[in-house]
Image 1: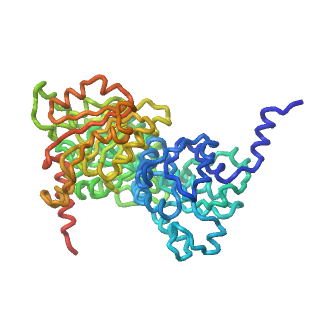
Image 2 (image 1 turned 90 degrees about the horizontal axis):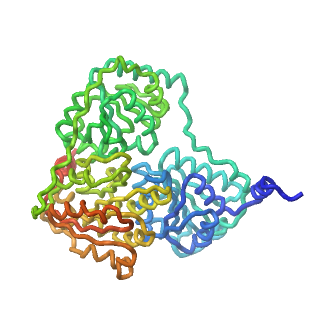
Image 3 (image 1 turned 30 degrees about the horizontal axis):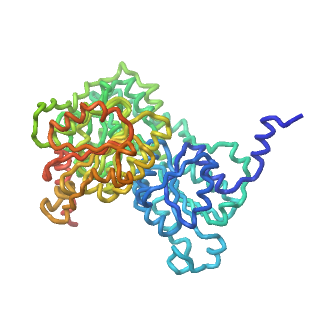
Length: 581
């Protein structure tokens, strides 16, 4: 008798596999399909294993952009991987990894490093500090990673990899894997691959969870005007399903923070808008701050997320749900995670006992400009106008600056996803993140446009990543806001200061530069809009809306114009910066 399929499968699984193959198979199993990074002599052999695991090598123009892109990919696909080389490569990526750590994004950072023999002997190798210390860079990364694994011993490598990937997923933060050149081809037991890594979240202790649920329900049933406020950690720790279930059952008005933009279906009758303290629209501010019970999900109360710490919410009227604890007023319940609590609150709430108010209407789309309106494109007009341009399931990426604040006034359609970096705020992040997000959507076989709103100053930091977008033929609409420099910095300090200016580029020409001199050859198309009428014409252009590939738009706005929310937040930031002990 010949071998059965099961016999062949069993034989293959019991056969040892190389460490690199094991690692990349594990990445594929947890959802990664494309790997960002740059080649270097300490990771080249490992890169040869990517095709064997059905992983696509992305490649970027530099490690910083690759890290930004891995961040964006993880936000859409769930988790991502980045490969750099020892020292020079990994340190170039470190700012992007720190941002992922700060904003709780799961990125697996794999660093190809010198062989274990070289490390033991303290050899004087290139890409080192010349002092024989091969752990110094891992120690740097340990501060912005939830797990560090030095894959030096083949007998322990498989367990180390599995543990690191589980930590990356559950804690939603980067992990660091140090892969020596001589371990890449070392053998580990292949049969372990037959058992998927357990990525399930540990459940709460039932008795403690039930107690917290009972306390929450007591306050919720007694409240006269409860509201729900959803923030970034609800997205990062994947409790949006539970959150939407609570909204559907109760009809409680729901608001999002700037970092939570896109977490909630903004077409839902219960959606009220973006709350950010004093920078909120007056009707939103009134609705949230007049509530006698605020249920926050995944709150992250940073300065820009709260418009300079201008929240007017009493802890006495607040219940906070977090990934590792819950808090009811001033009582904290460590280890009682929000997922189980939210599910049980939804299941057990008595809607007949609830007092539910209507959510405010929120931002309305502005009226269209007259056909011949040659007036300038003002921020207060543009961002509400974007509402009518967006389509269901769009991915909207906004850069630190006017875009991050202006998008508050845009009402998202059903299924839209918003990506921003409000806490870390590294300008230039959005270009790489846009590439990663668009690739994540492509890898998920999702028919989604990725739309980037990028300031001209920020764009100049990471413009080269446009070439990667073109290289992979990603479906991206790329708006560069041309307003002569760092607008957010101008409003914080130095409106006319030279250090807030940037050199004027012919931005649209970069679509040609990065297409080998001919944007049309790659399917890219360029546009320039300078008036409201230009915007209306562009938004009504069927080809612009429906074509695939890169659509690169220069959009001009006045230098000293900014969204109201940015101006108010910048003023608060300037006051906070000026405070002394």
